[in-house]
Amino acid sequence: MTTQGFLSGIRVIDCSLLGPAALAGHMVDFGAEVIKIESPAGDYGRQMTWPIVEGESLLHHHINRGKKSVVLDLKNDEGKRIFAELIKTADVVIEAMRPGFLNKIGFGFEKLKELNSRIVFCSISGYGATGPYRNLPSHGIAYDTWSGVLAPVTDELGFERIPNQANVGIVAGPAFGAMAILAALVRARTTGEAAAMEIAQSDAAAYFDWYRIETYMAYERPQSEVTGNPSDNFERREPGLAGMWPGVRYQFYKSKNGHVLFMASEQAFWKNFCNGIGRMDLFEKWPGATYGDHARGNLELQAELKTIFLTKTTEEWIDFGNEHNTTLAAVNTPKTVVNDPQFKDRFTWTTKEQTGSEMMLFPLHVDGEELPVPSRAPTCGQHTEEVLRDVLGMDASAIAKVRDSGAIG
Image 1: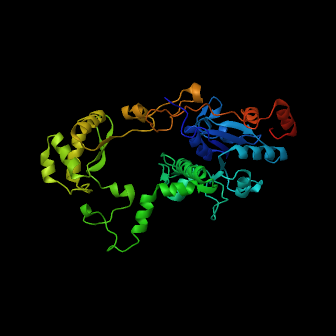
Image 2: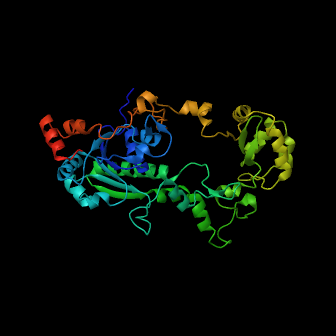
Image 3: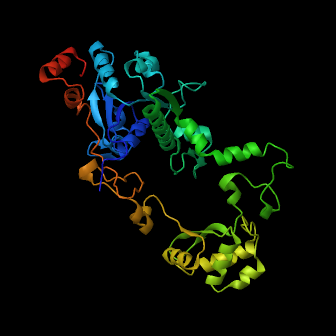
């Protein structure tokens, strides 16, 4: 069984700070060699956020795992020369910081192409390289508030608070960027043509929420052109999950030991559920439409279902759903999901010895193969001499001269 990864043999030069470094992290997950270029001061992401694991942040441990760290002072002429030599050997260059950084120091796309005619260049930043916010300092939550994904909540004292929910932009941006890089790599390998692209984490957050945004846009058109679902008598619902609030056959219910999500929006699943619990009277009284009927606002049915779902544990309801072919889901938290049998079956964890902290591996399953297990995130400059020796072919004397020049700190 091979564990090399699909990107074995691909070299990525990663100029990154903080969360956007996750873009090159995806390349690591698929087996690419990623060389993270750091200033002598290093990436201060090692000290940001929480928890701190053995002196360095979990953020750093996760998004920089498997990378090699090379210190280069890119204000130093010798540092720039070495950087140029590394680019000649690479397939991809990533600028994961404010857009235009590389261009500012003399390594814009034209220079990159001059050094390597089929280079794939990707810049990832907060708000992108254009628009009025392009130079606005920001952090990851900003992209979710800007896009409408995240809204403030008010506490019991009347203060506004950031709610407890998953970040979108800082995860989706690197994932979308990685997908684009892979497409560009295919073209570069096929035609020899270079590519330059840039992606904003804010854009990714908005695109991730396309359903709600596009629904609001669709509702700008006349009612005669854009209606609701036939099962709702063509009445327009609120976009996205807001339209689920009055749902009954698609709703949360308390179980004996937690919650379940009931999702019988198809008549066939609703019938299977009623048959399974021995309550065909419910189906006969409220059969619903064939598709997309959530029995909105039917409080009488909702009261019946509330009582029914309290009779079994969540685990028993999941078994019931499997047995009777009806739509039920477990309701977990980020803390409890790791104990769910489906999670245990699907995810592989690294050990703290391998990566400095227990981490989930990329959730892809490949027939007959295993994705490579990345090594621990590097200390600042940990691989400088190794890369100069093994990638650029420098001997000890040459490396010593480079060090004396101040190029590598």
